[in-house]
Image (cartoon, rainbow, N blue to C red):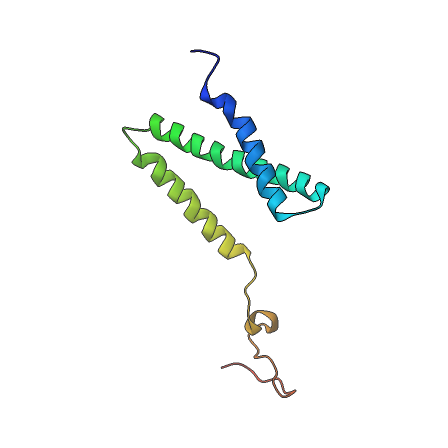
Length: 110
């Protein structure tokens, strides 16, 4: 493998794209700097996630459905956990089954 690969171009390209995008949105230099760092992190995170997904896909090429099923099960368990731990919204949640008063009178909910 030669030391001159296309991946050496990644750092200056990500830096240039992030800087230009931040500079077209803001005029203050400190804001441009911080937004450039934000976009560098965002782009590298996306590229890193795609890299990990492709490596895992290549590793599990024959039995691709096993990690896909595991990922789906983890996602579903996370959604169920979040639904159970988040407080419910609405007037019933704040008054414990008693309807919220509309005209100053408290009435029991049927």
